[in-house]
Length: 111
Image (cartoon, rainbow, N blue to C red; front, top):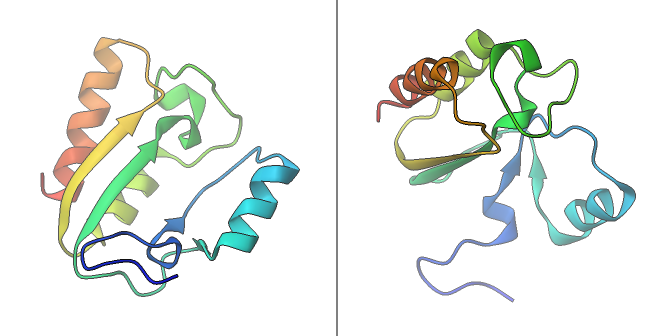
């Protein structure tokens, strides 16, 4: 069913860098219409970043996953988003190192 004006639909959601998905999560993504990869972005984008996708030596996260994306590669990816309207970063432990990294990511988004 199409959403109302302003609603976010599954087709509006790209998933990038997902790792360690279990079979029910994979099935949900496939069946719901959620996209893998950026493709064409909508005019207004909110970035929701689960930080355990980032390579563990680069951030202090609650559930580190090996072989994640490097912080500099993520900065480049985020800088390519034309007009983000906001962002949320989850999965982080409190640490001074994270503060510096999050400032870099926010700057890459222009926030």
